[in-house]
Every structure is written in structure tokens, then in C-alpha cells.
Length: 346
Ligand SMILES: Cc1ncc(COP(=O)(O)O)c(C=O)c1O
Image: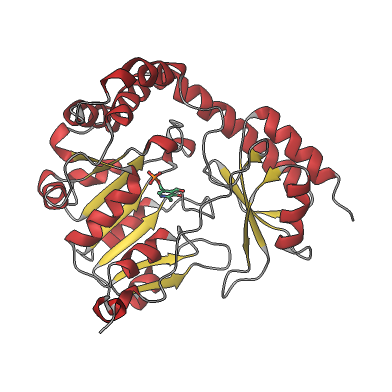
């Protein structure tokens, strides 16, 4: 017998999540972060509390309380996680599969179920990346758990409330990922008051700019959340991350001013890039762009030469085009991007 013989069969050949590349001195427009960075009050809170790092985390209830207030729900409707990624994993450990999502969407929706040995299927969006909910329900008949992104990564499109309600009425578990909702101004979180089968995932990694500290939260009915919460390990959020989350949630004006700038620049970028390439209209802090007949690899390398890192997707199976995704950065970074794109041949 070797070690290999004891490994669970589903572990072999698993796909790994590929993070956006980071290079010192380069502009990173690859991971949909808020490049304005966290609120200065967050930085102060982390610095000021670093000396208390010997104490185990003790602020979860305060973070839940502020997140609940921000989401407009009561505290027992909220749980926190080490990024929304941890919450996705806990949801998958709680509820039965198979799992389904639409395609293209966030890669973790398919990677995490497979890591846990759960069956997963993805169902293609329409050619314009809109969601055909009837087709989805038909093709995902065997699934019991759904991951739906709105705004969806990488398309930037939001789902219609009527379509979401149609899926919720099937009575199965629906996880609505609202990681980017601040950039769209639209949330379906109030539906958790009516639908016990709905869980809404949120994160402080995007608009709030603390992706490196890993804090997410989830909203649902108290009973539904309590099942997921029973699987949460103690202390999964570091104490400095808790201090940061509290400071971030208390400084909403800072977050909102970042969002305003990013949304304004998104529209400007979409217009300028759209004069040359096919840009998918986005409600998030990134743009999905079909660069064909140029190849996405060539586009990526040309940007890299200009010290800008974007995300290359290439071809989506079943779709035309060759895609890259570009995060809307700071205004200064966006100008650098525009300049770099203007240097492209042809
Ligand atoms: C749609 C979506 N959900 C969740 C996440 C991960 O969020 P977190 O940093 O909270 O784990 C990302 C990160 O890129 C994302 O794009």
C-alpha cells in the first residue's frame, strides 16, 4: 500500500483556482480589487491593534451586527466567513448536491464542489451572456444547490429579480453571490425575508478594498444560516481582519466615494474600449471584452509589456470570441490602460 491508495478518489486531477498575477511595480487589473485601497481608518485600525495579536478573535458578533445593519437585516440572519470563498465551501458542506451554475461564471462555483467530491454541472448562458432561466431549470433538473452570480463574474451582468424568483420557486437551495453588488446599485437581499431557500453572499474584498484580509458574510433566514454556521470552524477570521472589517463597515462614505469613481470610470472605459473591441455592458468593477480577431494572448502580452496585468480568459466553450477581463482601476491606472490600448497595432 502507498499513500496514494488512501487518497479519496475525487482528489485526483482536481482543477486549481488560478489567482490573478501580482508583480511588484505593475498595475494589477486582474482580480477586481478596489485599487484605491482600504479606507485610511482600516489601516489605522490594523496598525493600532497589531499589538493585540496574541488574543484569539473576539469580535465576530460586532462584525455580524454591522454587516447586518449594512444589509438591512437582523443579526441572526448573518454569518461571517474567511472571505466569501469560505462561506461557499461551508454551504457545500451543509447542503446536498448536485450543484449547478450558469456558464461562464466564477470558477470557484465549479472548483469547490469538485474538491468536495460533489457532482457539478454548468449550463451555458445565452450568446449575449443573459440568463435563460427556463432553459437553466430544465437542464439543471437533477441539481439541488445553485450558485448564481449577480453581477456575474466575468460577464458583469446582473440577473433579473423575476428570473431569480422563478428559480427560488423551485424550492431548492439558491446561493446568490453579490460580491460586486455595490457597483450595480442592485441587491436582492430582501428576498431572504420571504425565501428560506435563499442565501446571499457578500464580501468586503471588492468595494470595501480588504481582499487581502479575507472577510465575507452571508445573509439568509436565521434557520438556514444556522445550519451553515454549525459547520464553521472557530476563529476562521483573524482578529486583525475583524478590526479591519469593523472599521470598513463604519466608513461607508469612503467605500461609496470609491464606488462612485469606479462606476464613472467604468462607463468611460467601456465607451473608449468599445470603440475598438466588443465590450459586454457591465454592472460591476470590471469589463469583459472580446478582443477578436486579435488573440487574447497577444492582447495580454501587449498589456504586460506596458506593465499592466489583466485577466486572459480566451475562448468560452460554446461562445464566439476571444476574451479578456479588465478591472476598473484608479483613474490614473485607467488612463495608463487607455494609453496602452491606443498603442496596439491595427
Ligand atoms: C463572484 C465572486 N465571488 C466571490 C469572490 C471571492 O470573494 P472573497 O474574497 O470574499 O472570498 C470573488 C473573487 O474574485 C468573485 O469574483
